[in-house]
Length: 280
Image 1 (cartoon, rainbow, N blue to C red):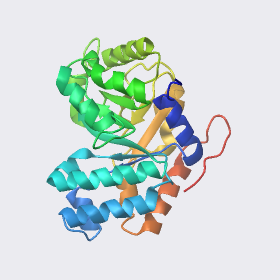
Image 2 (cartoon, rainbow, N blue to C red; image 1 turned 180 degrees about the vertical axis):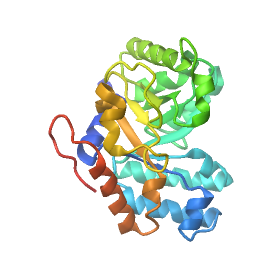
Image 3 (cartoon, rainbow, N blue to C red; image 1 turned 180 degrees about the horizontal axis):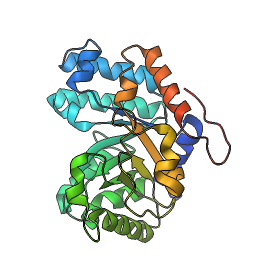
Image 4 (cartoon, helix red, strand yellow; image 1 turned 120 degrees about the vertical axis):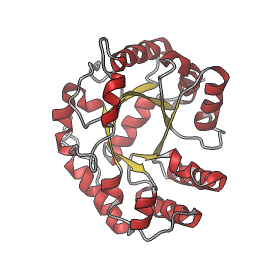
């Protein structure tokens, strides 16, 4: 039986054809109001329908923020399920921003929920928290290795409050890097990537392009896509920048959202291999 492509291979294929950008889907009350939508199930459904129409098949990766769907109860999660399915059917990868982390059977349940092909909210990748130890994530990364899914482990996040927790000598962030490299080596597959925010000077040593890096902080949080190479140096080819509010602010018109997507893609540095990105 042929092994599935690993996450990095699937991501490379997607960004090759649709550009190296992840669009965050955060239907918080402020964006719903700005779009003239109520902060209820009908508004959430309207948001979901619009972003699917605007971005499905046009962007490499979308990143729904689970909390904004959970806030509307089981019906909100049903909308997430429909949204995830629609994007995946269109060939857009879905990276679910859930930041889950636990041990044993509980972590296994999270893995089945979000990563198993028959899981209710099956996604292509998932953000996870290493607070209980990177190896406590084993049920998730072992399942991901079997299915070709990916995990992004919180490492050096973009929020200003993270400094006290993620600093020290050696830093917790640096230990996360070390542990993720070790796990990938043991799995023989590039399952684990890192979340390393773009809003501060890079102060964690990353192993070149060995690990995929999810980089929040572009757009509304202040980092500029055109500065990607400057911010990440030799690691930049492995970075998947993510932008949410700066894209969604163009809504709710589908054409305006597509134009915002194209503008963000155009801001990215030219690829080192000289190949052009396909614009939205």
